[in-house]
Image (cartoon, rainbow, N blue to C red; front, side, top):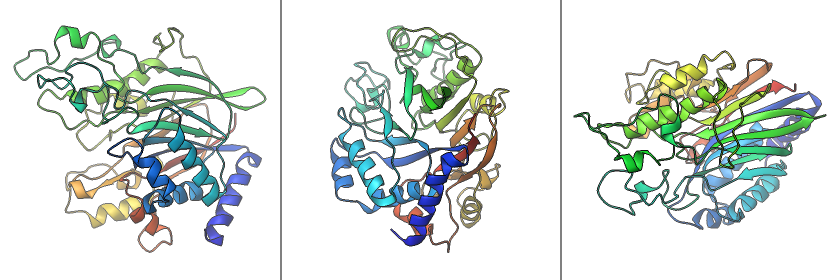
Length: 375
């Protein structure tokens, strides 16, 4: 680790609590592998990709961090090794974490993709070739005192749920499938942190399915919009039953909604209705984290996608290789009552000493962070 990086980590990590603010971040690290155990092997081998991701985490030094697209295992062995690597390379420590398998790669036993066959990996409740594949992990410097999970919540139970249909209007799912299909392709979590002196902060964490890789029925587009729509209804006071059978209205004063929503308000293939509802919700504020690197990359790729209408300053992912250009899909949205000090997207420009980390980290996503004053 360079002296510059070590100093940056020390100043940021040691000053976070002293300055009475908390840095909240989300990062799709792209650490999904083709089989169980492969991520653990790469972590133990200090893979260049993983080291770059760890150093990016060290430079930004969040106090709480949601990792998406991270292969999880039953005993959190890979996660434990990853946390050890963070401590060794950056001097950061996350003594608390929350991790469940969620729906990623979990077999449904149903024909969810409608190809007439069972056992296809696309028949899993969420994208993933094995249980825990491309899952979610939450890391924190603060104690996690409570959690609600909505991984078993049924899509049909969402108010005004819109089921996918064939072009001729026929239902895509037969009734026996539509009646049991889960909404969440990964996870929907409501985690409670104890900041200090009994002050609580709720983290509403999610990773919505990509709105692509489907057909004219727009299965994934509709599911993406519905997964985001869950949070709209949750904030509006819907009484949803969690995975433990509890039915409780959400009344928290201080909260932050974060994760990879796989939707851009202006560009891409998502429906975007629920996302725009979130971004303009009276209980939320959009800090509009930005980076100069995102704009520079967009200008360099101008020929890749000329249909973009959003400001590339706010983009969080680079899919130039897929001819999609840059999109804003990763979000940290604090409740409107919280004071935002600053925010940003880790996307250094070409020539910056840290630019090489973006090339080494194979993920197309960028870490997004927001600083808020402690309530």
